Length: 286
Image (tube, rainbow, N blue to C red; front, side, top):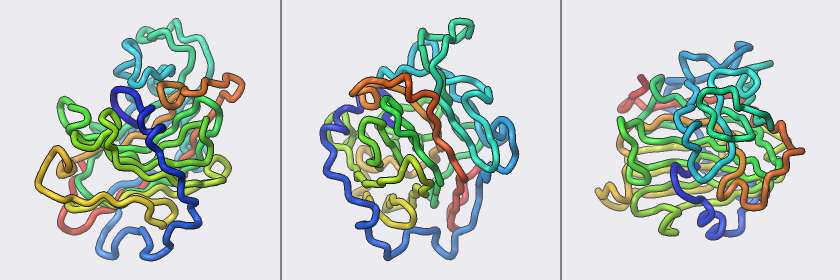
């Protein structure tokens, strides 16, 4: 999910999606044998998301969120983010929020969960098993941002492990953004995957990040590779810690390009697990 500015260029630039079944099954995208699990959430405790692992990002509620999105992101509140029956549910609603002190005039509520301040990683294998919403105007995302005191976007890098917009159901986007490669200047690097049952079945969205390569895919099938070609931070800023974000936006320049269907709400993204593995040379969870 792009941090600032419009994501419409991504939509306009998108190539025809490759059906998931057409992606190569070998070599399989999975953690290497010498990697170990360093962080995970299996969502096996009902209630609010585990506060030792997740924080609610609410910092731009008053000002309004990036990409002219229409949601208010709540703090810890079961209506918008809860764990039930082994799954994390992030749910968006139509509602009045005028009693909230940080309300910015939004008519939709949702949640944005982040590991910033809890855990971040440099290199590794990440996978998130999720089922997506398909309602018009929904924009769920699984992504990472640089864990730095003051983020400079896109210079510090962004990795979009999964994005989906409700007006283009069944098409999942995997994208990277850097100073040299980003949607603002129409140079972003991306893949589009056709997953017919993305909104009715769970799929595992994956990232393998090494010092020289990013590989993303779905269900063990690689779909996107980005190679480090030079020691140039404009092209490769991915040598420092990044934290994970899970959110469900409503509307915005890309998510709301064809409007928002209020009757499709409440809408939810369900997450079965989040797992992070790392090799023996780099373990930077904190």
